[in-house]
Length: 529
Image 1: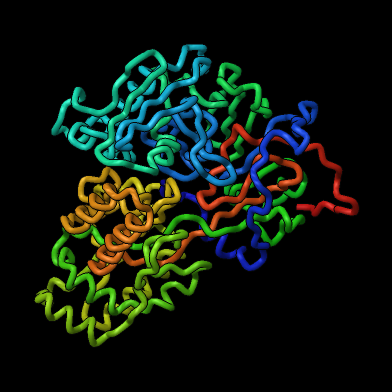
Image 2: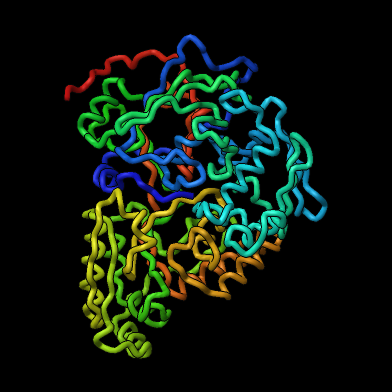
């Protein structure tokens, strides 16, 4: 889904002091067992969320960070949106859809009362216009290739085809027809992503439950969008995001009730109510990757030589959840052999087999100026020196790192990716040759063929087996060095705030949040700063 811009170093320091929690209750958003609304309108007020400092991009077509994705769940909406508990696709702007017998044609019927924040109607043409702008070759939108399952999309977005041949058509004011190349069971899950929201040509107009009221370096304010089709079930009048990296001040603000939900940037060890600290494994992976077109490391033999020299256990020693494969284990997905073997003799043999001249046995690693990552690089530097490879570390400020990758003339980069939907393709798409997400620039026809074959399978088990073959090939080709599966970190009183559920994507759609009527905890004494 998204590059992770949260402060992992803070979490690693505090992890030992937190309580590991998981979702325990079924989804029952707005009504109790008697059918009565559980939302008391009298206690609703502005929700105050704390996040670390960051320069937020509010354009859903180009935003690609986890923190941006969270805010965009409130500002924009597409045909589907995430269920806050299960992460399944819920009908949103689309009221219903029909699927053809061959499962390749999807006909969507939009809600007749769907409107933008300026009261303009949201029509099938609105969806069409939004998607075509996203897919335009000039847009270079990072998530555009996720729609390559639609006829003609890959050709159009890469400048090799025309918009007329794209399989997205308007057949009526509220009817959109989409023709896929192959049956794609997870298509609604893809459409939950903010990139495929309905976007007005006026950037100050929104399709979601909230509108952007103000945007500053230290504060973002959202106001309820009364023209939203489901505004009657949106409880909060406004949401204020406070942006700060001051751990001690932020912790004090949460402990004293000035913050309702801290997404990061607090000292977990000093949180008074330990039950409000929520830490869980995300559907994501931290890994290093090679820009595999750069000689001499464009050879899988040379890359494997480096991987055999990696001290895996030490590399992952700082990880809460170590990773030896790309994917987090999904139910029904086959177990595959991970990267764990260190063999210096085999590393030296492969390096000789790759026939790399001594003067070319140099590698450049590009990293953010972050002590956690630099420690990893120093470890690899020592390890690779054992086989005669010299490593140079190049650094840039953390807030500029991810934007710098594409133009950086280096060999190895660090990355953390959070999946967009609970499917292997959310990760494997990053390495497809023509993917708009392929930062590695790795091209492998056999890998692409495996993904293509998987896309044509309607049987879930067979599809997963084929995708597992693709992941195995990726690991065998030594394109990545998996390190860990990141954990999400939130501090929130779920007795106070309803509609918030712990989930693997750490996505909490803002439209479902509301305040419960609660009583103060007896005997609780607030800590001073």
